[in-house]
Amino acid sequence: MNLLNTFFNIPVLVQSLPQLLWGLVVTLEIGITSILCGLVGGLFLAVARLYAPRVFTVLIRIYIDIFRSIPLLVLLIVVYYALPFVGIRLSPFLSAVTALSLVSAAYTAEIFRAGIEAIPHGQFEASAALGLSNRNTMVDVILPQAIRIVIPPLTNNCINVLKDTALASVVAMPDLLKQATQAQALAANPTPLIGAALIYVALLWPMVAVVAHLEKRFSKGKR
Amino acid sequence: MNTSAAPLISIRGLTKAYGTFTVLHGIDLDVAEGEVVCVIGPSGSGKSTLIRCINHLEAFAPESRITVDGIRVEPGPALAKVRAEVGMVFQSFNLFPHMTVLKNVMLAPMRVRGTTPAEAERKARELLARVGIAEQAEKYPGQLSGGQQQRVAIARALAMEPRVLLFDEPTSSLDPEMVGEVLDVMRKLAGTGVTMVVVTHEMGFARQVADRVIFMDGGRLVEVGTPADIFDTPKEERTRGFLRAVLNH
Image (cartoon, rainbow over all chains, first blue to last red; front, top):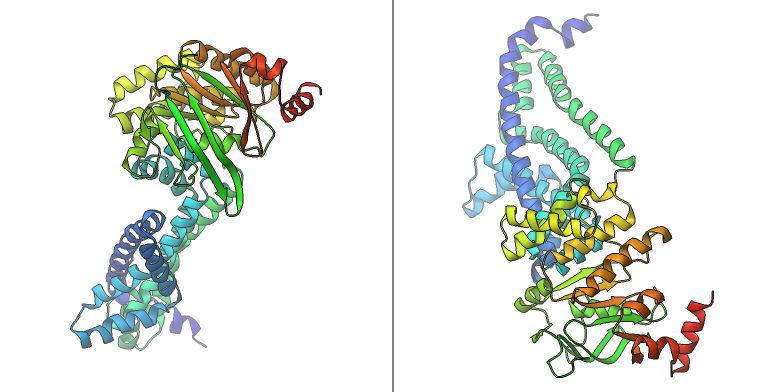
């Protein structure tokens, strides 16, 4: 049998490689934009949940719960195929970034909340007793300590967002997966798919290893 | 005691309850400028809660009234002003672990008073020298002993130049050999005319340094008097019982 020729066909791979790399660029664009939006949104939600009036904290909790329970693929299809019926027409790129950011913000908010809650209450009390404002308490005292704690789970979340960018291929986004399926169709050979899979692994394996290392380090004392 | 001037701290009918459990039963207390008041009593008597109400770390019944330097202590914009004038030293130090000792002391004056970094640093180094740890300025709190950490906490509170210093059992979590160095710093402070309210189990310190000693039990001020009154001729049976228990062990 010619397994090698089917799955690891070098000429096909070489031919499709430029296309795959373009796909990788799109994947990274979607991923990094969504990660940044999710970080900003999640941090905002987490801090607002601490200080906002009760109505808002309830709304924030509902937001977080909904966007953590909805399947990303469903959300993406709703954004891309359903919103146009109410006049909101987003490009494939914006649809993907919107769906990924909304979900990532919900997870990031939970991660930051856990990080902030892990800071001993005495830190809040000492800040209050010194007369520091809520803003200064957060920026100078609480967040610098919380961020250290949340780096491993945040990195984990980044990995998930990068992996989930593959879903963007269903809204005709020419990301890595979409380029691979197209190249496969063109070449009538699955090698480009294998190539794409290897690129995903090469991209994310180092991040996975970093998280594992950080988690080990953080669990070994260091507060 | 100077009773003619308005008291620096005035507490009227201070009541505090957790659900149906009342911790403080309508406490009245005045503290004069420059006075050192020590609050003693068994655990759970409400003495920590009492001083934590003075800077509103604990909320209390709205009909209770506390004023510091004439400013009413209540939630709202005036609270930050009260807190800037009221320093606090905690049992568990509560230093900021991610900042050097120097930065711990510099932070609040820069953020709350708008002091320049250069001036804040000059002042911080002076205060660290005053509490005897000038050479530790660049270290992190985690690298210091408990006694050193508590002295940093005192310097941090002093950096705001507060009118009042509250001490919430400042030596209770220290190893015995470190209690002395913290009490020495507090003794020196008392000598400089700072107004101090100290919740403590150190009876020797209370007797020696306090202008007035308050014995609390069950959320009430059971007995208030000079150290001699309280320690030598206590009138209340509960005070006598408590002192017997803590002094003869």
